[in-house]
Structure formats: structure tokens, C-alpha cells
Image (cartoon, rainbow, N blue to C red; front, side):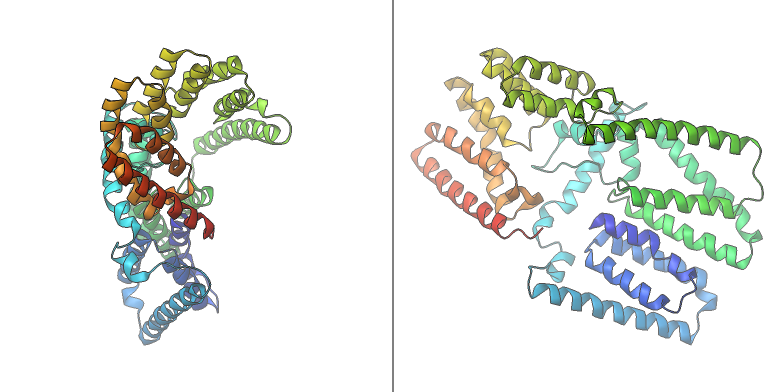
Length: 446
């Protein structure tokens, strides 16, 4: 929904300069869709865009335009509530009042977690300020310093902090200079443009500004359509404000296009070959993704532990932060009777991802001696107590995951070490948790 909301934030201003008899209808549909995304950040961004446009077009406003704005607003609100009502006849819908007031399950996640992501991303960037932790590394780099249970994400919900954490302050600086250069040139050239060119540049600028503003509290440029629109609009703005292009830039652009195109064709061919012929082609990729991890999992299932360890060692050589790889290495070590290696691998997996996966704790608990188990229970009980409420409210859709069963198994393992009253309480909570998860899965509508 947030990615779709960003798409709408980027495209709706275009209809202000589009000559169409159905312009108002298009705007009504776009605004209604934006409201139905229930993205508070996008709606706030829309308000900012409308304010900028109001300032720019203020001298052209007349009674007819005011009437059109009022009509568009009323029709948008009507279509929004009508759509929500029609859906409610068959499906459960989001309560508008609760959503606006943060009174649903997101009250546990949307506000504080974003603050944690932002501060965490900044801390990560300071640790590796030059080149960062690597592309798309935020989730695994952030997990060890994660502050709230299940509160992790693939990005820090901020475009600039994402670049800083994953690519370093150098890349962030270059990106900021790139944006600033377009802004400076646009401001300098704007007074010299014709009226229709001014309208085009300003409206596209509002689209770009809205897209970037929305990505200060979220990040949805990982969806290609949104990223393409951002740079396409920047390109249109830059070309609209340029008088001429030097001989150097077309040559540089062609060289860059050939380089990127060649690399993309190579990687794309590998992906196609892996999908249609043999996934082993991924070994030749610069970005093998989860190939080694998946291969190790398959090797474990077939009992080929030696091959699984080879795959896991390759995965960890590429990404030493991969907690899942460490966990699987512990699984293999346990099956081979290497208790100490098993324990150290499980311990490493937990240290890299301490607040998201109960299966790590469950399997680690099984190989501890009794004295270690007593101390370990003291550390894990606060997470278990917290998790009951998370399943009840289905925070981050956890009721649909295997975490429910893993936590139930862990409860069964620790009960013999608890008092009778605590054990009975945990059994009752476990039963209710499993029933809640089962009911939610039964009624799942997406």
C-alpha cells in the first residue's frame, strides 16, 4: 500500500498540466486511491504538494477553479467512504478513526520503530562511514542492534539514511550534490522559461519533492516503477531547463549506458537461465542472492551435510552477517555430533538476530546443560511474555509465520524448569496463542 501511495504521489500532479476533458475524474480516482491506501505519510505529503501548488497557481485561481476544487474534494471523499463501505460488506476493513488515531496494532510499530530505524541507520553509518555495509544490507546489519521485538525491516524508512548506512557518506554526499545541482540550475533558469515550460518544471518538481518527502518516513524506491519515475521526472526537469548540451556529456552518457546495459544483460541472462534451466548458473552472478543459502538448506534436507557446509561457508564468505547461514551451520554441526560447533553457531545466529526468530532459541536451548538452561530461561522469558500479545494483535503478521509454532515448542521445553503456577500459566497462554493464530490463518484474505 505504501509503495502504491508513493506511485500516486509521483503521478497525480501530471494531470494538472494534462489537457483532458476527464481531468477532474482522473484526479478524483487518484485521490480516492491515495486515501484508500491508508498511508498517513502519503496523505501528509499530498497536503504539502497542494500547498506548493496553491502558492504557484494562486494568481490564476478564479470562481470556476474553486468550484472544481470543491467538487473534486467532495467527490473524492464520497468515493473513498463508498468504496470502504462496499468492501466492508464482504471483508474486514480498516477502521478509519482508529487508523488516523494510531489505535490499531500499528500503534506498537509505526511510531517508535521508525525512530529506532533512523537512529540505528545513523549508528551503522558511523561505524562504516566510507562505503557502508553494502547494498540492501540494512536488515542484517541492523538486527544485532534492534530495539523492539520483531521490529526489523529491509530499510530504515528514510532514503538518505538508507544510502548512508548501506553505501556510506560518500555515496550520500554524491546523491545530495546531484539533487542540489538540478535544483540550483532550475532556480537559475526558471525566470527565463516560457509559461508552459514553467508549469511543466514546477509540477514535475512538486512530484519529485513529494516523492522524496514521502521517503523521509518510508522507503519505496525499491519498487522499480517508483524509482524509474523519480529519475525520469528529474531528467525531464533537467532537459527543460537546459539551453544546450556539451559534446562531453553525450559521450559520457553513452559509455555509462553501455556499461550499465552490458552488466544488466549479463545479470539478467543469469537470472533467466537459473529460472528456466539450472539454478547453478547463479554461482556466476555478482549477486548470487540466496543461492548458497537455499542450496545448503536443500543439501541438509537430503542428508548431504558436507555439501551443505561448503555452501554455507561460501555464503558466509560473502555475507558474514547472515544469521540464517549461521543457524543452518549449527543444525549441520548438531546432526554430525559436533556439539561445541553446534552451540557456537547457534549462539552466533542469536547474537546476529536476537529479536526475530524463536527457532534459534528453541534449538539452542536443546543443547544446553541444565545450569545453562536456567540462566537462559531468565533471558528468554521477557520475549515470550511479549510475544503472546504480538500474536493476539497479529503485529507484523506474525500469526502467519512459523514463529508461533517455534515459540510454542520453546515453551514446552522450558516448562519443566518453571514453577507449577508459571508452567500452567504458560500452557494456557500457549493454547490461546495457537488458537488465535489458527483462526487468523483461517480468515486470511490476501
